[in-house]
Amino acid sequence: MKLNQSRIEIASSVLAGLDILSPNEREPVLQAIDSLENFSLQSTLPSNIQKFTPSDIPIFYLLQATPSYRVIFEIDDQNKIKISHMFVKG
Image (cartoon, rainbow, N blue to C red; front, side, top):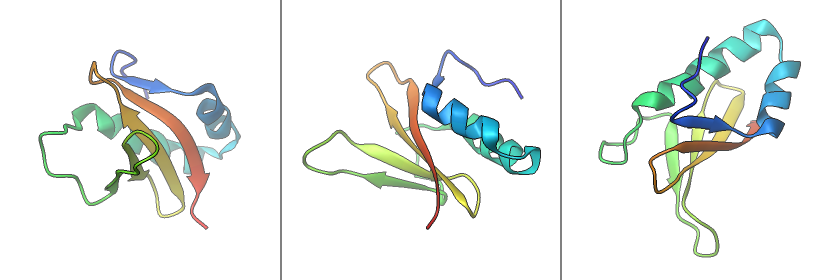
């Protein structure tokens, strides 16, 4: 799967995490990340995305990539999506 690097930037630590997943785990996570290409702040949030607005750090979003995996991302001033973390739902 080819991600559009002009809009989505994935942190190297997330790429390392993706590398250790099995193909069956990795593919749906990559598909969920790729779906962010169509994400717009002007649209209603999809049911698998939550917005967090803490007072002490910038706004961020949580993507439920699969039932087990979550991805945290931000959107910068140029509308680029920066994926900073991936973790297993506890």
